Image 1 (cartoon, one colour):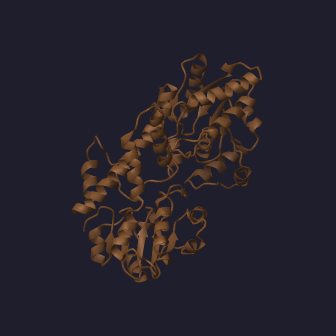
Image 2 (cartoon, helix red, strand yellow):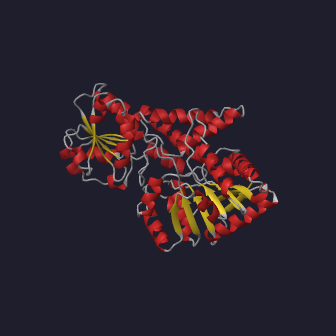
Image 3 (cartoon, rainbow, N blue to C red):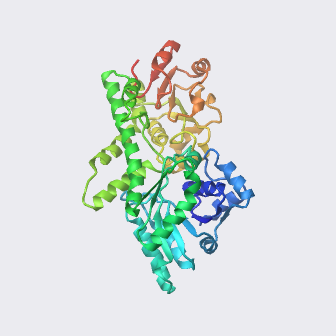
Length: 454
């Protein structure tokens, strides 16, 4: 099938590459010429395991191409995926200007029937706006409105495992209209996703608005579990319980399960923060407060300060002359995504207290440098207090403590003898509970986890 992907960011690239892997002819378009130049020269603008190799393989086979030519992209695909960014607006709602702009471009250039697929994470009612924008452009050209049908097909991709998630999905959600055009669109989507349903049917068909809400509901539920466990971890610290034992005790309940029950420094990234905020804003627009989600957001913001509070409790508020090694910058492992990363808050707060930071991350340091330039804009002296190193162990040299923020596998089993020799003081503040408190005590390491009791 001929497919166009509008937007060559995280969702667009993964969707385009995976659909090409199934034999489809995929045309990826983006308005950013630098991004297209990188892709056409063999590079990939984001880090995602397995994605670069898949792109190379399908470009070589002629199934995947990248361009800035909007007219050509509309002409190519019978199915047009809109996978552009929906950043948070100032009021917390999703900014749909790029989605609507993509829809207008389709309406300006289409001459044959098209299925328009909202792949971006968008609030309930977006399909109506996309449809209206396309029809408005079609009417200007005196073309019939039933040339297109808008479908909601939200993505459920975990950063760091997105290729695997797309190729072996838990579920595929498709929302269509009940009109004749909608039924035709449903059939085309069924054909497109048929290879992913060979073992068993994974597709859930529903109306468009339900599909739009499903994506937000899923992310809000996962974010809620994270904030709930962080609240319990903070309570465990106060009462002397061990949150790891609590996690095992409740996760073994089949009604609850173990997923997203790990306490830490709060969630970040491109999805949970903006999606929880956008869903809450949608509810307010309809006269209802989602009190649980408001609490989830509040807990998450406070949780980003948890390690800073532990450091301050141990060393005092004045950290001048102190040096901290920081392992992990990305908001989660297997990605270079620094959006809403807790590390950014932790670094800023420690610098405010006078500390210097030497940080290491396996892949996120280039992106982190860009983000820290923004975070410390107007504070060049503060920025000078932060440096990065290409080796995690060298970050430890003469540091007063190690701060772990991201649970990269490389951090799970370090050489503790070398670690203790390099640190000025054998102290670890572990924001991801990678180590057992008793084991650390036996090694002579002062260990501060999240909700862990020695």
